[in-house]
Length: 141
Image (tube, rainbow, N blue to C red):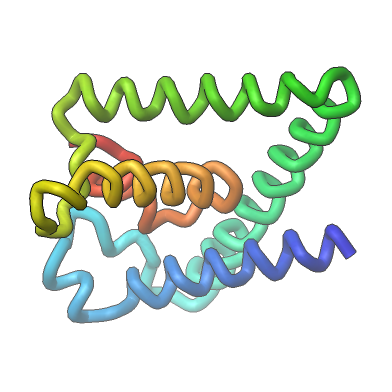
């Protein structure tokens, strides 16, 4: 069912974020980004539940919006994605943040960056994975 799928996506997203945040190695590497999971168990449970519900609800809302757009006119879905991703790429290029951080040769840098930027943008928009909001990914400089 759609509800079970969205809750599974939400749980997976929350588990990824929780595991990264509670990892001592990740906290040591980037203390400004990690460290939002509190120490006491009650607060951790509340945070985990909200981190699981947020992506689940986001996925349902985004999917419903696309279905409603498609009912009105199927071209509107294509326009929506083209505008959303196009604006995102324009901002990335304008800020000098388009090229992905992985070191590649000069011929594969641009196509690889385009594929990765679009993929990460779509996954982030539908799931709200916290790690993808990092400044090196969707977030910006």
